[in-house]
Amino acid sequence: MSTDRVIFSRPFRARRELANLEAVLASDHSHGDGQFTAAATAKLRAITGAPHALLTTSCTSALEMAGLLLELGPDDEVVVPSFAFTSTATSMALRGATCVFADIDPATGNLDPESVAAAVTERTKAVVVIHYGGVAADMDRLLDLANTHGFAIVEDNAHGLGGSWRGRRLGTIGTMGTLSFHDTKNVHCGEGGALLLTDEILMARAEIIREKGTDRARFLRGAVDKYSWQDIGSSYLPSELNAAVLDAQLDEFDAIQAERHRVWNSYAEALPDWAARNDVTLMRVPEDREHTAHLYYLRTPTEQRRDDLIAHLSARGISAPFHYVPLDSSPAGLKLGRTPTPCARSAEFSGTVVRLPLWPALRDDQVDRVVDAVTAFTV
Ligand SMILES: *Cc1c(COP(=O)(O)O)cnc(C)c1O
Image: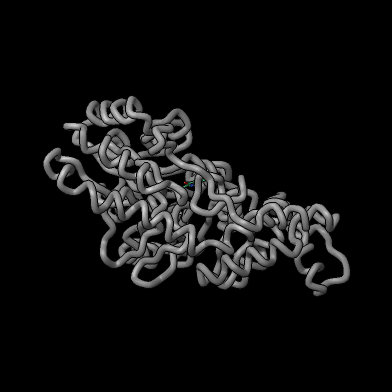
């Protein structure tokens, strides 16, 4: 049995990656919107059920597109979770909108709808929700609030490709959804992302925004005989080289997910007795949601013991990191945001969460090593 370091995450290697890259380079067409972009986009639509999908250079750029489509400006507010990745907020702040930070539900790490309700004002134009670890947020209450107050919901679904809430697929429940194909995500192409849309009118505008404000997409379909500057926009489309890798990964999506669930289920079976004895809270998935095995995390009773556990695992050759640092108290959050009520649960979650190694080729003996090391720790 190997005693190599058990790293936290390793990008998946798909069988067709190199052949696809070779085909792109040989075709003399490596700029965006070629055959691999079309093929990968079709696969994403099949996995998510989204009527429309656009590949982007990252999830961050898909979120920026969402901010443009929402026509956010300095008079607008966007509610974002305090416990989130920076892109979730900075994509909205980039348009001049004020980020209003809301607290999370510690049961899932997701946006707490009651905290959202308390943060909403007549200036609220959107709420950005993360499905943390690929476990859906509490969508029914958020959808109710969106109906009552007339704001849009953007799903930052960087973790949740293939996940669902009450049978509805993540990324297609709100007004728009985004995906990440960064190499730390379940499916990757180095750096990449996608924007998922249901609305035709938003889609027509999105494909222009994505292509430097031009109607090149319509031109490529033969709908217009030349393309011209139509709207503001930027360069949000990835190269065919990225799409070629993504397409190869999506070919093996089911196998990737099966492998990740194997590891996730091993932790979920092995750790409950230890957790109960040590006042540790394990990641839980409410029954009405299917998760994506993006993360397996646990929470210790205190920050000190969390740091001790990370050091204990590190000394045994296991990398187990903490996660997001709360945005509301970060330097940019203080400057660009507003926090109507302190996000105490986000701070506590952030201070006590540890993520265990989880990736498709992680062997069972390595998973056993992680379990043995974790259960040898007394909290
Ligand atoms: C990874 C991640 C992003 C950013 O994704 P990029 O593709 O690197 O831009 C945004 N939001 C969440 C929740 C993420 O985990």
